[in-house]
Length: 163
Image (cartoon, rainbow, N blue to C red; front, side, top):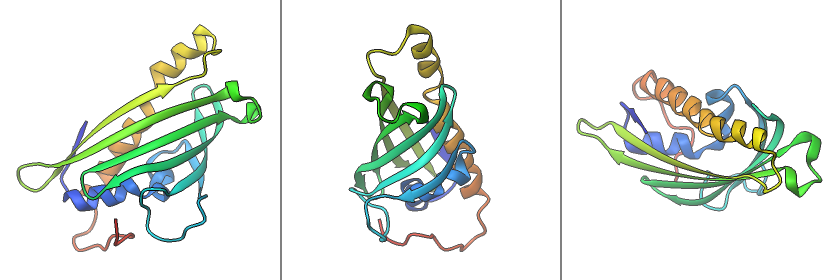
């Protein structure tokens, strides 16, 4: 959970746009839209990126499963160790549900629930590292998002004007 002193529609649009991820998380780079669309992000949009995680260098896909403006974003992600891209046992799936609510005074509260689905063959020591670090990237992203939105110059236009 995080509270951001910015209007809910601004916070929602910022979080929905996966192209913002490298600015929010230093472990994420080379984000590209992979669904063939060039329009604003919405349900059905997919992205591909590279991510450096505690358990290794990975390739990730992010699929926007649900986008209900301005209150709900559901993401399904799959992360694959670069060294194991052809091995189904090296894939880690996750499901993120972000709910956006208005705070008194016009700010926004984001509640994020993350569920991790590691492959069954992950050794216990690797699984412990994954579980211990699963929420870290989201916490980094939310803190950076708070900083970016709260320090945004007044009247600055949103990059994406549609939900």
